[in-house]
Image 1 (spheres, rainbow, N blue to C red):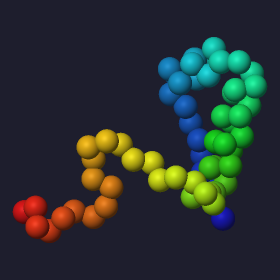
Image 2: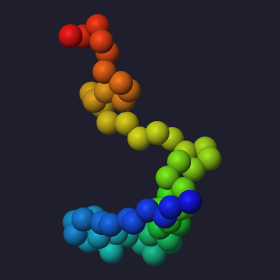
Image 3: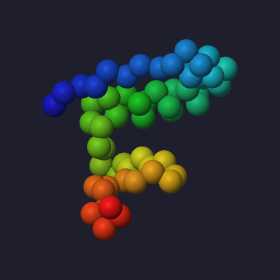
Length: 61
């Protein structure tokens, strides 16, 4: 299985530095798990509002 490389934007890194250590540890454990298996068991598919999540609809020409 391929490991993924995780990078953070500078702004995200600053926000993480301002969080409590126990919260950061919980976040990093989840991120590290995703780096090993991007579709973890029980994981949810990410979705942004208003954007299509599947193949284009041929009826929408």
